[in-house]
Length: 140
Picture 1 (cartoon, rainbow, N blue to C red):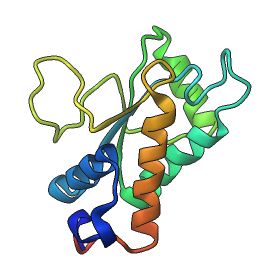
Picture 2 (cartoon, helix red, strand yellow):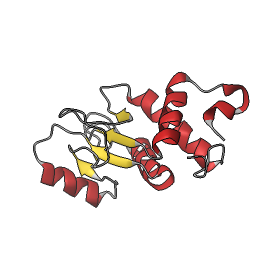
Picture 3 (cartoon, rainbow, N blue to C red):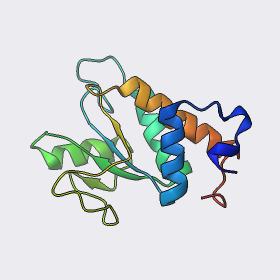
Picture 4 (tube, one colour):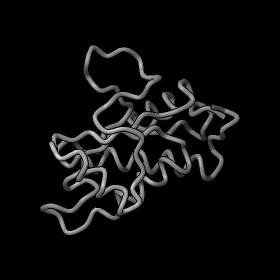
């Protein structure tokens, strides 16, 4: 079933677009920041975002890029590993990403300074649709 076949096609534009990208590309590339996105800095907790990132990996098979300006890449990697937060690369494009002239390519960005609540909500909605078989791997 494609997103156009969902009852009433009542998907929001961001969810419709992400779903279409998932169906067309057979995989999503999701970039996420560290501080106040998956690691508390000014915020009290980031557990919901961490849970969503894990589900994106486990349910959607997303390629995950850590997109950070933190110069301590070894420290970032250690934090992610210690907290079982999945990632495929840090500040590097997916090997299958379209050419982007040096800019990281992603289908969705999770960043506390770039609409984190909406982006995470859209991603959670797509995960829900896949888990509940409104969109199946066979469709993709």
